Image (cartoon, rainbow, N blue to C red; front, side, top):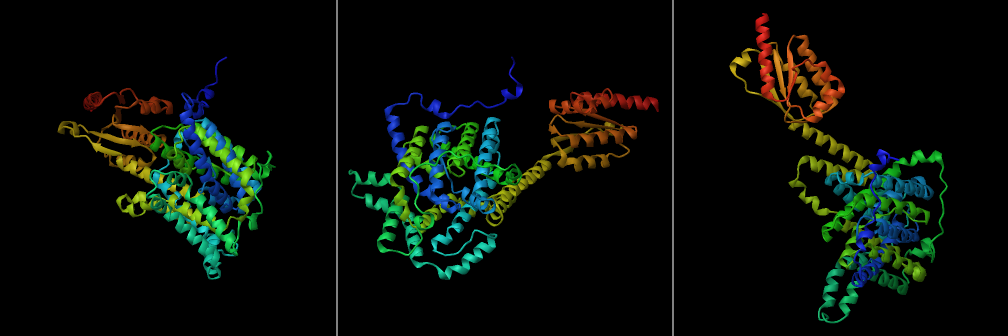
Length: 568
């Protein structure tokens, strides 16, 4: 039995772990083990902070990092990518939770997971790379700003609700509440942010004189965010600071994964959730493939984008079933994994298991973690997430690049990520179409005086004939005066023709035919000739109106001119 044609176009399911484990040995495992433990410790505060900032409970982030992180490593298309909750999702998830509720967030994540798997299966992973870098930088910087703004409440210890209202209303409420800030929370958050910023220099200072000892190696293996989590919690507890903690806001974190739970899906609600679903899927695809490309640049490997999207799809299907949130590839944890020696998906699997062990053993200790400390961690993440150097460099780029990037950035911050990306893509498309249309030229061919006297005119068309250059074809119709008896269009340097341009060519042929004149085409490529035939235009043309090259077209024009003179 023959395989259906559509099945042949589907991409094979080939997780990178299969090829990565070829020749795997104990030396590589020890490197993966060290990297996995390091990344697991790094992911601990980030997972909880991302969940809290998204309007969810801290354990939601842990569940996501464990379940989704494990699946992405096992089934992904990259050897070193680490998956889990990401800062880029904070704004999106918070918006969905506020507008639709947690139950519908689960439904959106499930549907986004299915969509991502289909995108990878059908080979759309490669198309994600076609999104202009100006849009990626614009919405990345916009998300970074929104993350920082979302942490002002906990950073200053403000006792207000800023989950409702638009961008201006929320920030006006924050501005009005700042005089009533909690000085203890503000001082702790400021000190925490300063520590994270100065930690690399502080580590270098502490390492002096200990080059041969174990102190620097031990210190280097512990991330600054984890040291901050421990020290900040101890300071707040010992001094008895009156600040909000994970325990005071969310209660204790459970010491086990939740059981598999199927959500209640109302068919009537699915239509309203299509927009949020597409946003999650789009953002996950962008973030994961962008992260994989960063990893490729460091490791000199090449990831499989379609396999990566299939893994992201499976992770986002499984994560909400175990109480998690949307997940994607994470650049900071992936880079940490590479720099710590991770060389296969085993490191990502170990990272997930480390998080599970920490949750099972030390979950009650998270009760006393101050939200001010976590807000400082997210502020630091937001700063490192943004590509701020791109703003001063804008003067080096074209006006089109500036408009697209700034529009995407401002719309992400002020309006919505989905709107920002949609407008960015539309602007990019419009500017690209305009640019391509300017490259299409109708160049008059120099002819002998005797040919011009016979009423012969010729043009070479460079570029693409499509809907945006219809005006140029119409001008050709207007500029073809009574003195032009025979018009030759040389298309051998025409890249492509679309149906709109074809209709204009048909109109040009009709205009000339009604006037008793002749239109001749030459040099058609395979795409143009195929379109002529499929549309029926070739059948409308008389013999001799299509030629292989310009010399044949001119010879036919001379023959027509001689016949007309003889008839006259």
